Length: 320
Length: 298
Image 1 (cartoon, rainbow over the protein chains, first blue to last red):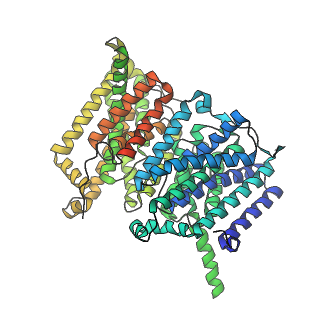
Image 2: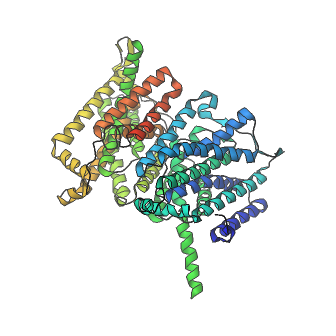
Image 3: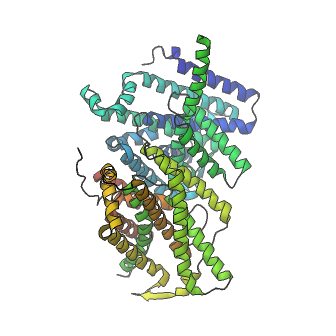
């Protein structure tokens, strides 16, 4: 599965992009920009997971379930076991969300279209309902999270940034390896015609289940990293339905052509939000909503389609 | 006994307002196959406009008899204006698109209108309690309840009856039913589907706004208060069956009474029960409890 993965163009572009980002952040970028990149990369993991599902025409309007679950797993492990190690935190978030996704996947893999969206919404709102009312989990105030450590040492934000970049690279390479495998190629086939895939001897439900668990793991990891970099978890900004909506929105904005697209999309989203909040604090949600409409109407392929067009344009010129 | 009466009464009141809002949502879904997140905007704008109108009437010491007409007129105004604008300029361009994209577009519209509220009405909460004060309180089996809240049940019954009558006994209702059943055949039979869509969307929008406008006097109207409602009315519609009108009635009764029960018995489960029921219904009967059996089309 992983053989020759480093010769893959997408992987090479991804690694180059991340390394450039790391160098830039350690040399020139101001703190607030670095924070934006950090949040963008963390959230980008969840978008990558949604992109996987989107390729099979499944849109989850409840992915905040895993996002929030990962974040709360990190918070609870700190509260009860005192775990602050960033590696452990990431692992806990991924595994917790993955397990939950594995269980719910048995039900969700039978659903398509709007029913899939509605059932995932229902599951995420069940968690929201519990978290928002549970006093010992901080109800709507949430919980605060202490700064992360690494193998017993204190971790500065600069190093946290490097680590997040590292996690992102690992996750994205695994996803690329998955997409190149037979199982990965099935995703688009399922979207085209499920019955044919069944006749070819593959189990559609199993393929969807595996994909669903992967996307749950990614969203959980995103939640864990987000919790670690924000230092705060609360139900309204992590589990409520509008967070799921936001995640789906970034997926559309990114486009699904490449593993790098979700991260670029998520970073751009962070910047739109920061600038919108600065320029028009009363109307930042309207600016985000307006961007969403503009993307749907004018760039249905997302940002990645624009990037691709620009690059292809250059290539044609070279041929001439 | 007292406990059950409380649950029943509170549940019915709550169900009535959920019913009015969800009815709009389910009609829009049934006819246009659009899951309209922007329904929350109709609700919020209805509430704000009514609160503003009530405030205007009180400030200028106009007659108290104007409260009710003011509420109705603000609901209709909001429904017609917002409904027409959203249908004409956003949704009409998207009818052939993927259903998920349409949901997202309405989500974008919802975000925009949420902020337009803050820009228009400010961030301070409105407390338009005057109509509720005017009607006073009454004792029912030993429970002290506002008369205004009880009229909500009456309003929901009127809306339900009007809807049933309109759909089954009038020409427009029959046109609507044929579009719900099969859009293409309806077009072939000469029904102007575009017109049906506009009217349906505006009708649904008016219902959403009416829910908000009528509920305004009983709560504090503040920014972001539609966020919970959107997903609650989704739950109602899914439980009853998306696009089913009796389904909206049963769904809102289930959600209303369950929620009232949870509030009095185990407040921690208030939201949990609603969405747990939604998930269970989707698992057992994805098409909803009261969705009619689907005839197979060839």
